Structure formats: structure tokens, C-alpha cells
Amino acid sequence: MRPYLPIALLALLGAAGCVNAAGDSAAGNTDVEASDGDTHSVNGSIHVPDGAKRGELTTVNGTIRVGDDATVSGAHTVNGDIRVGAHATTDSLHTVNGSITLGAGARVNAALTTVNGSLALHDDAQVAGVVKSVNGNIALTAAHVAGGLETVNGNITLRGTSHIDGGILVRKPEYGLFHWETSGPRIVIGPGASVAGSLRFERPVRLYVSDRATIGPVTGATPIRFSGDEPSS
Image (cartoon, rainbow, N blue to C red; front, side, top):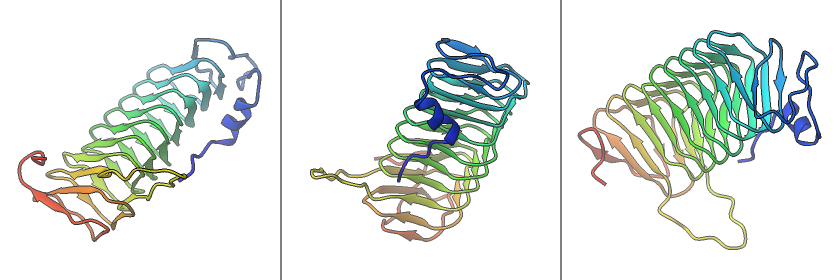
């Protein structure tokens, strides 16, 4: 699995400074309020006020915060978290070294990806594309993902009425010269959750499935059924 970096973000990585869509320099700021157009920064966080409509948000070293009920074209950072407020809408979210959090009722119209960071989707959050992390945990609470879940080393936890279309894929690690095999990720599909499509595991995992959950066909693992809210182990 190789990280995806948007073209705009790659350009920032090679730039000494940057300019937003309105022509105002955002480089060097510690906190930037997003302009009406696209907003780019190198060493600064970007903030979108509640209810605002903005364009593409990109930074290299900084957090991106999208307020409640706001709308943005996308948010992309390298070293920083992305936090999307309740009922906000964005096209895609990408970070390399950071976590991504979707507030209640937030909507992502494309993919949501990170390499080294956790992903958290809260009640009624909606993602139309894939939700993907290489080394971070993925946790859903009554959320819906249309494009499936994918990880290599991260745990996956589905709580409440979380629903996944497109299945779950846990990829085999790309080992170097030396490696140590571990027990693998912990996958928990809790009571009321459902996964449509196949659950495919290319490496050992611990797969726990509630007796009140619904899943598709499983390849590469044996489900361990449990009752109650959480597995005992």
C-alpha cells in the first residue's frame, strides 16, 4: 500500500513558500483562517469557521480543522491531524503522519486516508469512498462507509449500527530484510454492525464477530463469535 499525495501537496513539499488562491502568502504562519478560495500553507495550521464554504486546504506541517456545518473541497496535510466538525462536508481527506476525525453527521464524498495515524468516524458520519490506514487504528461508531475499509497494521473496531459496503481488506506487510511476525491486527465487529462484501485477510488477524452482527464471506481468518458488547479477550 503506497501513500497518496495530491499534486497540490507535492508542490508544497518542494516549495520554500506558498500562496493561497487569493494571492496572500500563508507560509510561516502558525494558524491560518481559510480564505474564500483555496488555502495553502507550509508550516501552519488551517481553520475553517463553522458554516463557511471554502476550497482546497493543503499544508505540510500543521493541523486542519473544519468547523461544524462547513463545506470544503478537500483537506490534505503531511504532518498533522485533520478534524472535521459535525455535519460538515468535504470531497476527500488525506494525511501521512496524523489522525483524521469525523464529527457526527459529517460527510466525505471520496476517500479518507492516512499512513501513520488513527481514523475515527462518529455517529452518522458518511464516507462515499474507501477508508484506509496503513499503521493506524480505524474506529467507527454508527457510521457508514461505502468504499470499504483497508489497513495493514491497524486494529479495526465497528460499534453501534456501523455499516460497511465494499468489505474489509487487511493487506500483508511489505517486509524488508528483517521482520518479526506478530499476532496481527485485532478486528472487532460489534453488536448491530454489518459488513457487506468480503472480509479478506492477507496476514494473521484476530477476528471477533458479535452474534448480533452481520458479515459477508471471510477469507484468511476464522471468526470468533462473542455475545455482549465486547469480546472477552
